[in-house]
Length: 103
Image (tube, rainbow, N blue to C red; front, side, top):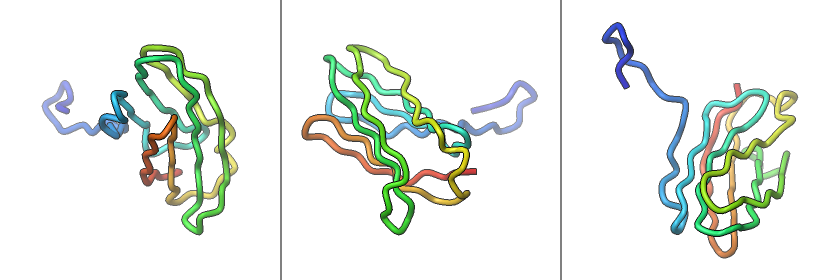
């Protein structure tokens, strides 16, 4: 991206690409909450798991996503230690895992 003064500006949004027939993007790094945008073709259960790098599950949430674009938030991440985490998003038989940073 280019800022209005001509300098480089980087987005905090990571597009995780096609998630089956669905589009998925995550705001990274995160602090007080982890924001996820997901587009689904039909209403679906979405499971979000956040693990520390030792594999310990530190947060999880189940959502029911409506057809179309959904903005999901994994709340209560403020008290997590800064560092790297593994984010896993699952729906039906599709799962994607990506590293994210807590600041």
